[in-house]
Image (cartoon, rainbow, N blue to C red; front, side):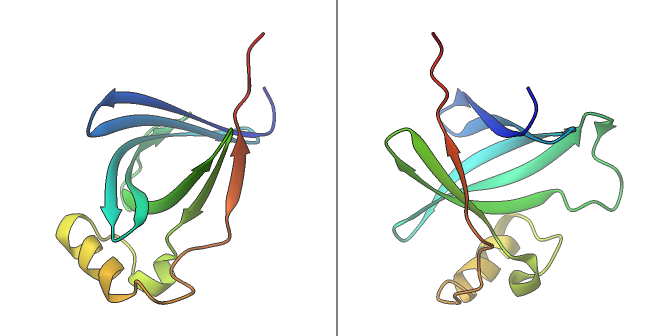
Length: 118
């Protein structure tokens, strides 16, 4: 299907597989849920895209906040110009916490609506 969509599959209680398509670009992520205060987030590890595994030099980790409301999920990707690029693990969490009150911490929201089969 054309357009922008996301598929999230639960692998375990601590890990998800995410397939994100925008236009003709497909990206695949491992996602790890985390909670910072009252904010539900996922640490995303980019595995690769339709062309294959992650290329050297591409940032592998990112954080996205998400909120669920009925059949809609709102996702906001962390702004790397605020926290820095290429951070992972404790360094990423520390940068996140340091900037938690910064209104520019996350980019503009993207909304997805659940598609019902049938």
